[in-house]
Length: 330
Image 1 (cartoon, rainbow, N blue to C red):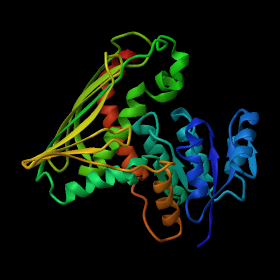
Image 2 (cartoon, helix red, strand yellow):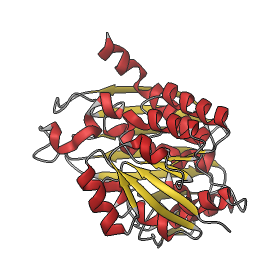
Image 3 (cartoon, one colour):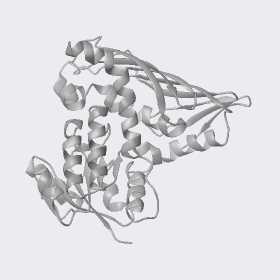
Image 4 (cartoon, rainbow, N blue to C red):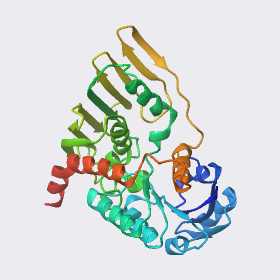
């Protein structure tokens, strides 16, 4: 099989361990070029990771004839721009999550790729991590019977320096991120539920800025119904007194509970009692999903995280934030 030659637009922190090495460690995959607006940092990344070429201009990387596919790892405000440019150049695109700042931007990206005849994938890599494949397996085996409801809770304790937006960077700047930490973190939690249970069809939500530490919302709560009939609720609060990351999937015969953001065990509770199921996690968490992309490009498989599924998650978040955004713009 031919090697897929990748170029990265935006070789920042996420590319150091989570994703970048996966592009050159996956089978039949190579990383041949990287870009960052700061050329010195791009050159440094290229040197440390053994990448042949670096750029300080995204257009030059996208139009490099030796780049077959583009990984867009910039903040969300440029996801649409670089995705559309890559599509126009005939290059398949793998874009970081959240897919864009809004569902409307996602639709523009999907149209650009469809018109150009190139595939679009989104970096919801949990769809191929062993932990979440095990949850999927338990659900398919009927370990908890018929699924009835979902409860999502994510609470964060503000750090002492959270009053300085610089410490949180673009993640709490709505102009760049599209919203606050909800889009950055909640997107992963909602996407994996989409993977387990299918699309969410109805959503209601509320958001607020309670602590005033930055411009974006710092709490979001919502209720939602999946097309399959399962109902769910979630709260994402970033200025509480404790850190909590816990999702429960409730069925007619039991419950599955898990932490989304680490490799702690799955908790399965049934009539027989509660037991922990240990899981593993790869060194480079994007690599299993990257492998599915490479395999799809080589006609030997399919990637489960597409522009279509990624856009669905953006739509859900838009619905939860709609009233808050309307008031903020008013």
